[in-house]
Image (cartoon, rainbow, N blue to C red; front, top):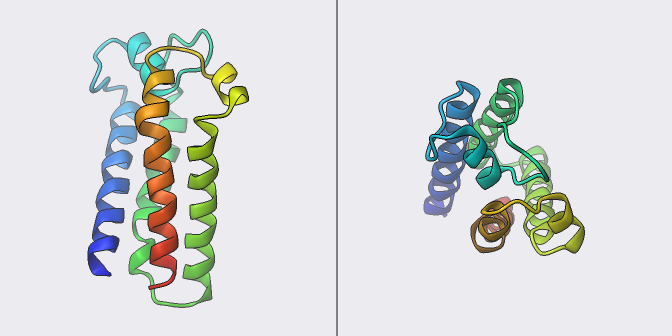
Length: 134
């Protein structure tokens, strides 16, 4: 299942790279900060990206998670992958919950969350579970 580990790592490292860009205040793929914030965060009335420390923290966390499949087999690796699967699963399900929709009503985030962000999180949850058993 090495290809699953590679896929997991590549996806998470790409996401970490995006968050690192945002931590450096490089607005990509949308150059206008307010438009980017509405596309990737979506909280009501948002017009600025989250603080650099928050973006950097997410980048560091995603980078660390990218390494999980390469850890030696054992209970710690298993527990971490199952825990990460639960977190990604909850986030993926949240994309369809009315409470989350009220919290993040901005467009285009709302559309992206239903069509891409939520399904990506669910896919990562499944991938983490598969990796936990390999």
